[in-house]
Length: 448
Image 1 (tube, rainbow, N blue to C red):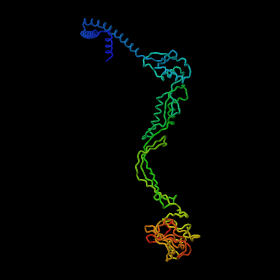
Image 2 (image 1 turned 135 degrees about the vertical axis):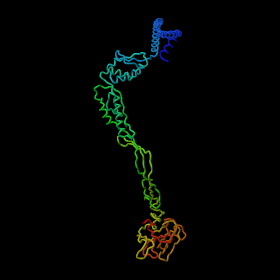
Image 3 (image 1 turned 120 degrees about the horizontal axis):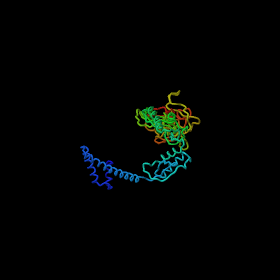
Image 4 (image 1 turned 90 degrees about the vertical axis):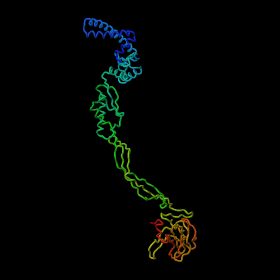
């Protein structure tokens, strides 16, 4: 519905022009137009009469329309606070609170200077005339500022770097820093690592804090730190794990590497973040194994250094057997060739050897115990299973403490050191036999 349709409805609804009159008026206008087109005297006379009446109708419509307009305008007014500086109206706010905020900010900028010139009063205005507190404070400062101009302070994080008069150019300068960074790192996601803020203020026009566009650009280029993130590909080592296993082949506190570890290789895709070319963070996005790592195996000893048997202590060895003599540790004759022939065992002796305790090298069953005519003298043989036997010879007379068939424990006393049989001084002759073959006892006692 256009303006004239609305006007028509409004006028007729007020009863100013009956509907029939309006319709008749427009019919008469149509006839007049037709008569003019024929252009005769009668039609010309009718046209004059029509124009007079039309003028009256238009005048009535104008008066009614103006009345309606002003009535609507007054009905749309809202309560407001009028702010004046002297006799000049600065503007209107919608509440006393907004007016107080505007004055407070202006007072902060201007001090108490000429503040008595600011007056307030209640008013009614159309809503579109209301202004914000910021707009009102700007107008007050402009009116009373005497040389103060609006500026925009620039802060990088919380550091003030200067002020500008044109916020649009300031934002262009900030954008230039960003665009330059995008050119430097075209394949990266680019941003600033600091916040950049513009805060409105007022300075004297000749303030040294106000920067030119070139000065601002130079400061921004130097102060703003660029944060950028990009995907990077790299080969990396995969660290091997160390696995520890316990073994009674080693004493407690000792260890050895059974299998050396080896790092693996992998191909990584990482998201790396930089600030001004300084790497600050890296996050692995994907990883592809090329060669797996080989774990390192370390053996940890659990064997005690000695075995307490109550009244005496037996020395543990790193071999299969404990040391077979208490308090004698010198091997006086090793396994193998010697001047008296091939030696099938080892001889153990030392100071005051006679009578020292001889113990079972490991748990087992006594298979022989007594006198041997072949040169061993008093001797004992113990079977340890799996074809393994140990022999202890040249024992002191009447010192054998076990008999055939006895089950003995590791470190248990079986006799004493003597000089019986084919012997030239008190000592223990010790043999190890595996499936009947006499082997060098040294490895079995941890000597090699």
